[in-house]
Length: 209
Image (cartoon, rainbow, N blue to C red; front, side, top):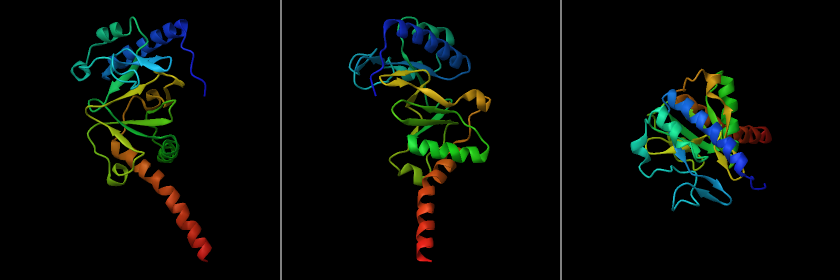
């Protein structure tokens, strides 16, 4: 995949869109933060983190959680910062790879319960949930599953990456801005993880007959 050409005009357009999204989320009480952004092959906006983006621009970012919308608007006045949301305050995020994310989204559809889902150009999906619940055992031991809670953060649309833009797989509006219980998403992920083994077991039983 070719590297995205973030020209000055595109950067300006994205900065305006990012600013609008950040302010809108801040008004809803989401703890948004400015993050580093792609500039060629590296990440700009915070010295010493050129190869580690997107990360919060401010080193004291945890002290800035809950910043008012007016200040949030000022953060995006000059640069096209990535849009990050601190987790463990209003929401948590369960991050998985693309394959598991698609399977879990399918399971959630069978539940009849849409939940906000973010996807990155790097093939990572984040399921946004209410806070405060640890991962169940089979998820906690799986390397493809990561819980973002207190002390962490995740990127939100339309944050730019070198190879594309973070986007919503399911927008919060679809869910009426209601975050699901973490247990519901974890159940869907556990079902999705178990599906291959179930299929394998069925095949083995058929072969044995």
